[in-house]
Length: 226
Image (tube, rainbow, N blue to C red; front, side, top):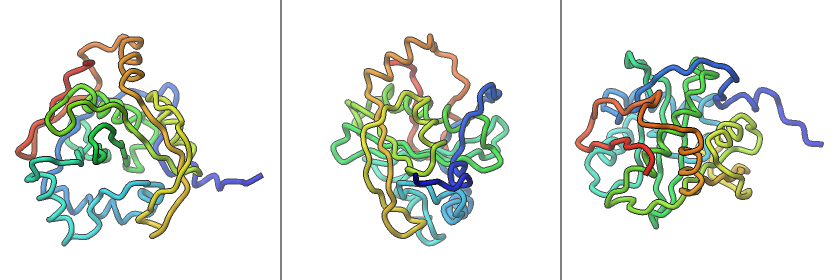
């Protein structure tokens, strides 16, 4: 039997049973965030399990990345900074639309000192609500959300499974960290499943998260179940 190094299993955040639910904010990246984002993209412990390459990896590239996020009229990437209620960064999460705009991928990184507080799980839930509840000209009829997990990272799989994502197969993805392909498990959350989970859980308009003050020209709102 193939044995996986235990340290690899814990290189993604997980939600510990019974952990406290702390409120948090999701906001657009500001130019002042770029240095931290570049540092994050170059921190192996944080990115070696990342299956999508969307963070700026250099100071030079960060400026063009930021302009692409703030000035593009038909964006396909929707990055958010996750902060606590005092503005301290907890992590980052991104919604990446596919070319046909019928599906999108969710990718999240939580700062190591904030693991095991449930932030990854609840940030994914918040962005899923945003994705399915906020149709616009860029993603008018989103049908499903996708997640990719490195096969050696069981905690990532547990996080997306908690959010209602269902296993849909295996594959390969390019890793910026390894500069090559890594094996992944694919997960999918259909709109119908999301809608059922929202209703079964009795979620109303009050959530433990909210979208913070806008740091760019666009405003994205969280509307609740559609």
